[in-house]
Amino acid sequence: MEEPACTVGCAGIQDVPAMLGFEKKYFDTCWQSIPNVMKKLIEKDPKMFRLCKVGNKLKGYYGAIPLPYEIWQKVLKGQIKEDEAVCHAVSFKTPEIYLYIYSVIVDLNDKHHKTYTRTLIRDFARQFILGQNRRENIRAVGAFTVSEGGRRMVERSKFIYKGGFRGANGKYVRSYAIKLENLVKQVMKAREKGNKILIA
Image 1 (cartoon, rainbow, N blue to C red):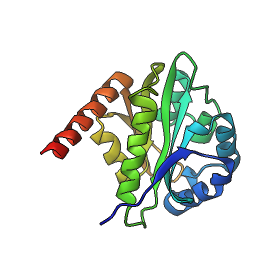
Image 2: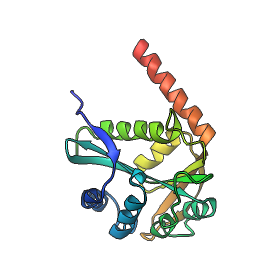
Image 3: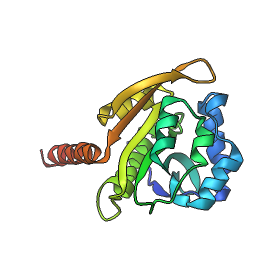
Image 4: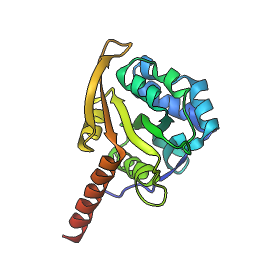
């Protein structure tokens, strides 16, 4: 099966309706973004949202929000609402930041959805973990998962389970975090494994 030619780039205000459409389709109401919050984050730094598209059609995206440690800790413990937490986003150039994965979402109805997920994960690694774009000021990366797919993704990357809390919908969510240096090791291992498969 031929894989689609997808591209990944920063979000623009014009992308917000399509992004919110994905959230309404796949997330419970309590996990859906407030449009103005999403717009403000994009205006602050479009790199906080990276979009996977085929042509001009959105196929998935992830959010990576730089936060101060105290806010990052609170959001992972469920002590502050997500939309309130991300309003405390700092610059990616701040000397010490803690990255919060706001969401990873793809069009699950598309037969190529696994391709889009892989593309977004690789982009995250390129933009924040490895290579010239690597950000030495990132201390750790954290997320909480509201789906089985999200849980599998962070556990495969060796994120450490940090506990959980009940969301506004009454469902239990799990929080995970990993120090940047450990995430770098995981990404390098995955890359080496991929190279061995290609060589074999």
